[in-house]
Amino acid sequence: MLKIASLSRSTYYYHLKRKQEDKYSDVKQEIESIFTENKQRYGYRRILLALRQKGITLNHKTVHKLMRSVGLRGKRRKSKYKSYKGEVGKIAPNVINRDFETSKPFEKLATDVTEFAVCDDKVYLSPVIDLHNNEVISYSISLNPNFEQTREMLQGLFDKLPQGVTPILHSDQGWQYQMKEFQRQLQEHKIIQSMSRKGNCLDNSVMENFFGRLKVEMFYGEKFQTVDEFVHCLKEYIHYWNNERISLTLNGMSPVQYRTHLQAI
View 1 (cartoon, helix red, strand yellow):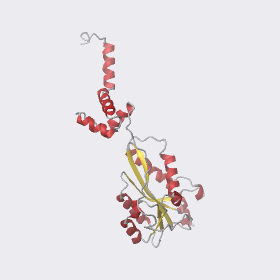
View 2 (tube, helix red, strand yellow):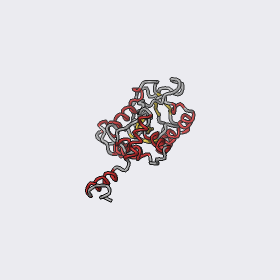
View 3 (cartoon, helix red, strand yellow):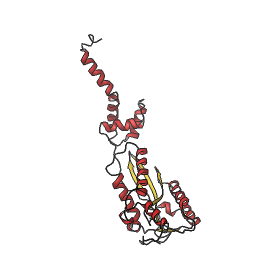
View 4 (cartoon, one colour):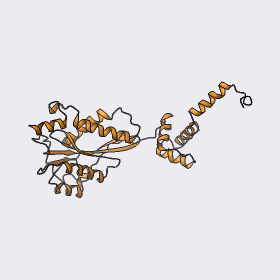
């Protein structure tokens, strides 16, 4: 066979090895062709479907990896997540009014939603923070900023509410917090609703600061291979924030350490 091909043994095995090493070379060319034909508008999901239409079946992770290996990335619209919809001051007054001082846990709480762009997906985090020690009391992570996420976050909060407390829960004017179901659930658990003025981030600066610190410490500059990997890291960070991260405003303790310290006094 080597004689017929006029190849030396070493040359033959060199080319065979190269072919084995890059078994996706033809697929890469097809991906580049589809990408160019569609004016660089296709991300890996649409490339995946286009390949299937041509009879090439791969999973989305492989397509994503191959696109990255040849330096292809679809055009992405960059926009900051904004949950505001509705009328100013029509739902609840600004009870907190930037007075974030507290004398005990579960006196004043704050919530909001933030967005992460991960592996061509969007991931949304909806936490509740106790303003007394900046502890994340409850949170929900979702690929869709729907009310089911808000409901899950609320249930986590209700499960941890001590008996007899009537906390204030402050938020911006996001659509989630304007829903009748949200208001009903707060009333059932004797929680007072407070809402920021539209477009005034300082009214909910505790949440803005938490999101900013979280993204600086575990998101910006990091590379996540999958959404699942990111979600795992996000959960790890929240645990770290609550239980291990030193806070200068809590006498060098973490939020949970500070709460435990107060309970022991």
